[in-house]
View 1 (cartoon, rainbow, N blue to C red):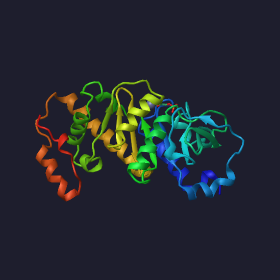
View 2: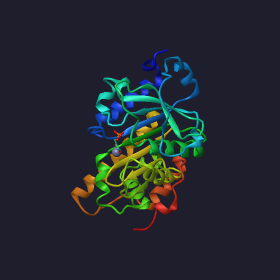
View 3: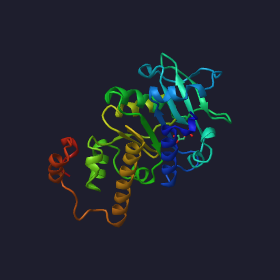
View 4: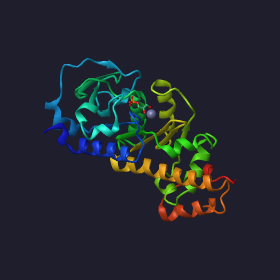
Length: 275
Ligand code: 13P
Ligand code: ZN
Protein backbone atom coordinates (compact mmCIF):
# COMPACT_ATOMS: atom_id res chain seq x y z
CA UNK A 1 0.00 0.00 0.00
CA UNK A 2 1.24 3.53 -0.77
CA UNK A 3 1.83 5.59 2.36
CA UNK A 4 -0.25 8.47 0.96
CA UNK A 5 -3.23 6.12 0.43
CA UNK A 6 -3.52 5.09 4.08
CA UNK A 7 -6.46 6.45 6.05
CA UNK A 8 -4.23 7.81 8.83
CA UNK A 9 -2.09 9.85 6.43
CA UNK A 10 -5.20 11.16 4.65
CA UNK A 11 -6.73 12.10 8.02
CA UNK A 12 -3.52 13.82 9.12
CA UNK A 13 -3.25 15.85 5.90
CA UNK A 14 -6.92 16.87 6.08
CA UNK A 15 -6.58 17.97 9.69
CA UNK A 16 -3.48 20.05 8.91
CA UNK A 17 -5.33 21.75 6.08
CA UNK A 18 -8.42 22.35 8.23
CA UNK A 19 -6.15 24.08 10.76
CA UNK A 20 -4.57 26.22 8.05
CA UNK A 21 -8.04 27.24 6.79
CA UNK A 22 -8.89 28.42 10.32
CA UNK A 23 -5.94 30.84 10.22
CA UNK A 24 -4.00 29.08 12.97
CA UNK A 25 -0.86 28.36 10.93
CA UNK A 26 0.84 31.49 9.65
CA UNK A 27 4.17 30.69 7.95
CA UNK A 28 5.49 27.49 9.62
CA UNK A 29 3.48 28.05 12.81
CA UNK A 30 2.13 24.96 14.57
CA UNK A 31 2.89 21.25 14.35
CA UNK A 32 1.02 17.92 14.47
CA UNK A 33 1.90 14.36 15.45
CA UNK A 34 0.12 11.00 15.37
CA UNK A 35 1.19 7.80 17.20
CA UNK A 36 0.78 5.19 14.48
CA UNK A 37 -1.01 1.90 15.28
CA UNK A 38 1.07 -1.32 14.90
CA UNK A 39 -1.20 -2.64 12.11
CA UNK A 40 -0.85 0.66 10.24
CA UNK A 41 2.96 0.39 10.48
CA UNK A 42 2.83 -3.15 9.09
CA UNK A 43 0.65 -2.08 6.14
CA UNK A 44 3.41 0.25 4.86
CA UNK A 45 6.62 -1.22 6.29
CA UNK A 46 7.83 -2.17 2.80
CA UNK A 47 7.76 1.55 1.84
CA UNK A 48 10.20 2.64 4.56
CA UNK A 49 13.80 3.86 3.95
CA UNK A 50 16.40 1.88 5.81
CA UNK A 51 19.48 4.07 5.55
CA UNK A 52 18.74 7.02 7.82
CA UNK A 53 20.81 7.80 10.93
CA UNK A 54 19.60 7.68 14.53
CA UNK A 55 19.26 11.25 15.86
CA UNK A 56 18.91 12.20 19.57
CA UNK A 57 15.37 13.33 20.45
CA UNK A 58 16.69 15.67 23.14
CA UNK A 59 14.73 13.96 25.88
CA UNK A 60 13.89 10.47 27.02
CA UNK A 61 10.49 8.84 26.39
CA UNK A 62 11.06 5.19 27.35
CA UNK A 63 7.34 4.32 27.34
CA UNK A 64 7.30 5.12 23.60
CA UNK A 65 10.34 2.97 22.71
CA UNK A 66 9.94 1.25 19.34
CA UNK A 67 6.85 3.26 18.34
CA UNK A 68 6.33 5.07 15.02
CA UNK A 69 4.96 8.62 14.63
CA UNK A 70 3.72 10.71 11.74
CA UNK A 71 4.95 14.28 12.35
CA UNK A 72 5.13 17.63 10.59
CA UNK A 73 8.57 18.86 9.53
CA UNK A 74 10.33 21.79 11.17
CA UNK A 75 9.97 24.98 9.14
CA UNK A 76 7.35 23.42 6.86
CA UNK A 77 4.23 25.44 6.13
CA UNK A 78 0.83 23.88 6.95
CA UNK A 79 -0.56 25.45 3.77
CA UNK A 80 1.81 23.28 1.72
CA UNK A 81 1.06 19.95 3.41
CA UNK A 82 -1.95 19.18 1.21
CA UNK A 83 0.01 20.16 -1.92
CA UNK A 84 3.14 18.12 -1.22
CA UNK A 85 2.80 15.91 1.86
CA UNK A 86 5.96 13.87 1.17
CA UNK A 87 8.06 17.06 1.42
CA UNK A 88 6.35 18.44 4.54
CA UNK A 89 5.71 15.47 6.84
CA UNK A 90 7.64 12.40 8.00
CA UNK A 91 7.25 9.03 9.64
CA UNK A 92 9.81 8.55 12.39
CA UNK A 93 10.71 5.44 14.37
CA UNK A 94 11.93 5.64 17.97
CA UNK A 95 14.66 3.33 19.24
CA UNK A 96 13.89 0.80 21.98
CA UNK A 97 14.98 3.13 24.81
CA UNK A 98 13.05 6.13 23.45
CA UNK A 99 16.05 8.47 23.17
CA UNK A 100 16.71 8.57 19.41
CA UNK A 101 14.62 8.75 16.27
CA UNK A 102 15.16 7.81 12.65
CA UNK A 103 13.24 9.15 9.62
CA UNK A 104 11.64 6.17 7.81
CA UNK A 105 9.51 8.04 5.24
CA UNK A 106 8.87 11.58 3.98
CA UNK A 107 10.76 14.91 4.15
CA UNK A 108 11.99 13.99 0.68
CA UNK A 109 13.65 17.36 0.12
CA UNK A 110 15.47 17.12 3.45
CA UNK A 111 14.68 18.52 6.85
CA UNK A 112 13.92 17.25 10.32
CA UNK A 113 10.84 16.74 12.47
CA UNK A 114 9.21 19.73 14.19
CA UNK A 115 11.31 21.72 16.66
CA UNK A 116 8.59 20.90 19.20
CA UNK A 117 9.31 17.14 18.96
CA UNK A 118 10.23 17.00 22.66
CA UNK A 119 6.85 18.48 23.63
CA UNK A 120 4.95 16.20 21.25
CA UNK A 121 6.69 13.03 22.42
CA UNK A 122 6.60 13.86 26.13
CA UNK A 123 2.88 14.67 25.80
CA UNK A 124 2.32 11.40 23.92
CA UNK A 125 4.16 9.50 26.64
CA UNK A 126 1.97 10.99 29.40
CA UNK A 127 -1.25 10.54 27.42
CA UNK A 128 -0.42 6.94 26.46
CA UNK A 129 -0.13 6.21 30.19
CA UNK A 130 -3.13 8.17 31.54
CA UNK A 131 -5.54 7.17 28.74
CA UNK A 132 -4.29 3.55 28.60
CA UNK A 133 -3.17 4.01 25.00
CA UNK A 134 -6.36 5.68 23.72
CA UNK A 135 -4.93 9.11 22.82
CA UNK A 136 -2.87 9.16 19.62
CA UNK A 137 -2.93 12.78 18.40
CA UNK A 138 -1.03 15.83 19.71
CA UNK A 139 -1.71 19.16 17.98
CA UNK A 140 -0.04 22.54 18.42
CA UNK A 141 -1.62 25.63 16.78
CA UNK A 142 -1.20 29.39 16.97
CA UNK A 143 -4.83 30.13 17.83
CA UNK A 144 -5.32 33.89 17.63
CA UNK A 145 -7.98 34.48 20.28
CA UNK A 146 -6.49 32.21 22.93
CA UNK A 147 -3.15 33.99 22.42
CA UNK A 148 -4.89 37.39 22.77
CA UNK A 149 -6.43 36.32 26.09
CA UNK A 150 -2.99 35.47 27.52
CA UNK A 151 -2.27 39.23 27.50
CA UNK A 152 -5.30 40.18 29.59
CA UNK A 153 -6.33 37.27 31.85
CA UNK A 154 -4.26 36.06 34.82
CA UNK A 155 -2.23 33.04 33.68
CA UNK A 156 -4.02 30.58 35.96
CA UNK A 157 -5.67 27.28 35.06
CA UNK A 158 -8.72 28.21 37.15
CA UNK A 159 -9.34 31.60 35.51
CA UNK A 160 -8.81 30.37 31.93
CA UNK A 161 -10.98 27.31 32.44
CA UNK A 162 -13.84 29.22 34.08
CA UNK A 163 -13.81 32.07 31.55
CA UNK A 164 -13.72 29.67 28.58
CA UNK A 165 -16.46 27.47 30.06
CA UNK A 166 -18.71 30.51 30.53
CA UNK A 167 -18.56 31.47 26.86
CA UNK A 168 -20.51 28.49 25.49
CA UNK A 169 -22.65 25.89 27.21
CA UNK A 170 -20.97 23.03 25.35
CA UNK A 171 -17.49 23.96 26.64
CA UNK A 172 -17.63 22.23 30.04
CA UNK A 173 -18.98 19.15 28.24
CA UNK A 174 -16.17 19.16 25.64
CA UNK A 175 -13.33 19.87 28.11
CA UNK A 176 -14.69 18.99 31.58
CA UNK A 177 -11.18 18.61 33.05
CA UNK A 178 -10.40 22.25 32.17
CA UNK A 179 -7.30 23.77 30.58
CA UNK A 180 -3.78 24.32 31.89
CA UNK A 181 -1.62 27.38 31.29
CA UNK A 182 2.17 27.49 30.82
CA UNK A 183 3.68 30.95 31.45
CA UNK A 184 5.91 32.40 28.71
CA UNK A 185 8.88 30.12 28.09
CA UNK A 186 11.42 29.61 25.32
CA UNK A 187 9.74 27.24 22.83
CA UNK A 188 11.35 24.32 21.06
CA UNK A 189 13.13 22.49 23.84
CA UNK A 190 12.97 20.11 26.75
CA UNK A 191 12.09 22.63 29.50
CA UNK A 192 8.79 23.74 27.95
CA UNK A 193 8.11 20.09 27.06
CA UNK A 194 8.47 19.09 30.72
CA UNK A 195 6.06 21.85 31.88
CA UNK A 196 3.52 21.01 29.16
CA UNK A 197 3.60 17.27 29.72
CA UNK A 198 3.04 17.87 33.46
CA UNK A 199 -0.20 19.68 32.59
CA UNK A 200 -1.16 16.86 30.22
CA UNK A 201 -1.35 14.55 33.26
CA UNK A 202 -4.65 16.27 34.15
CA UNK A 203 -5.79 18.24 31.09
CA UNK A 204 -6.23 17.62 27.33
CA UNK A 205 -5.49 21.30 26.62
CA UNK A 206 -2.36 23.30 27.49
CA UNK A 207 -2.14 27.00 26.62
CA UNK A 208 1.31 28.50 26.01
CA UNK A 209 1.17 32.17 27.02
CA UNK A 210 1.74 34.57 24.09
CA UNK A 211 2.29 31.60 21.74
CA UNK A 212 -0.57 29.12 21.21
CA UNK A 213 -2.12 25.89 22.36
CA UNK A 214 -1.50 22.14 22.58
CA UNK A 215 -4.40 19.67 22.44
CA UNK A 216 -4.41 15.89 22.88
CA UNK A 217 -7.04 13.46 21.69
CA UNK A 218 -8.04 9.98 20.57
CA UNK A 219 -8.26 10.75 16.85
CA UNK A 220 -8.02 13.61 14.34
CA UNK A 221 -11.70 14.65 14.61
CA UNK A 222 -11.76 14.79 18.40
CA UNK A 223 -8.44 16.62 18.68
CA UNK A 224 -9.28 19.16 15.98
CA UNK A 225 -12.75 19.58 17.49
CA UNK A 226 -11.23 20.27 20.90
CA UNK A 227 -8.86 22.93 19.53
CA UNK A 228 -11.74 24.45 17.55
CA UNK A 229 -14.09 24.55 20.57
CA UNK A 230 -11.54 26.19 22.88
CA UNK A 231 -10.55 28.76 20.25
CA UNK A 232 -14.20 29.54 19.39
CA UNK A 233 -14.89 30.11 23.07
CA UNK A 234 -11.86 32.41 23.29
CA UNK A 235 -13.18 34.33 20.28
CA UNK A 236 -16.51 34.91 22.03
CA UNK A 237 -14.67 36.13 25.13
CA UNK A 238 -12.50 38.49 23.08
CA UNK A 239 -15.66 39.91 21.45
CA UNK A 240 -17.44 40.19 24.79
CA UNK A 241 -14.50 41.98 26.43
CA UNK A 242 -14.24 44.27 23.38
CA UNK A 243 -17.86 45.35 23.87
CA UNK A 244 -17.78 45.74 27.63
CA UNK A 245 -15.44 45.08 30.53
CA UNK A 246 -18.30 43.51 32.52
CA UNK A 247 -20.82 40.81 31.61
CA UNK A 248 -24.46 41.68 32.25
CA UNK A 249 -25.30 37.98 32.63
CA UNK A 250 -23.43 34.70 32.32
CA UNK A 251 -23.52 30.97 33.10
CA UNK A 252 -23.33 30.68 36.90
CA UNK A 253 -21.59 28.06 39.08
CA UNK A 254 -24.93 26.43 39.90
CA UNK A 255 -25.78 26.26 36.18
CA UNK A 256 -22.56 24.31 35.61
CA UNK A 257 -23.43 21.94 38.48
CA UNK A 258 -26.86 21.44 36.89
CA UNK A 259 -25.19 20.31 33.64
CA UNK A 260 -23.26 17.52 35.34
CA UNK A 261 -26.10 15.01 35.67
CA UNK A 262 -27.67 15.27 32.20
CA UNK A 263 -24.34 15.45 30.38
CA UNK A 264 -22.63 12.85 32.61
CA UNK A 265 -19.57 14.98 33.27
CA UNK A 266 -17.74 15.80 36.48
CA UNK A 267 -16.75 19.46 36.77
CA UNK A 268 -14.13 20.03 39.49
CA UNK A 269 -15.34 22.50 42.14
CA UNK A 270 -12.05 24.45 42.00
CA UNK A 271 -13.26 25.96 38.70
CA UNK A 272 -16.64 26.96 40.18
CA UNK A 273 -15.33 29.59 42.62
CA UNK A 274 -17.35 32.69 43.60
CA UNK A 275 -16.24 35.82 41.72
P1 13P B 1 8.26 24.03 13.61
O1 13P B 1 8.19 24.59 12.22
O2 13P B 1 9.67 23.62 13.97
O3 13P B 1 7.26 22.91 13.82
O4 13P B 1 7.91 25.19 14.63
C1 13P B 1 6.70 25.86 14.55
C2 13P B 1 6.20 26.30 15.88
O5 13P B 1 5.02 26.58 16.01
C3 13P B 1 7.12 26.36 17.04
O6 13P B 1 6.43 26.51 18.23
ZN1 ZN C 1 4.40 27.35 17.95
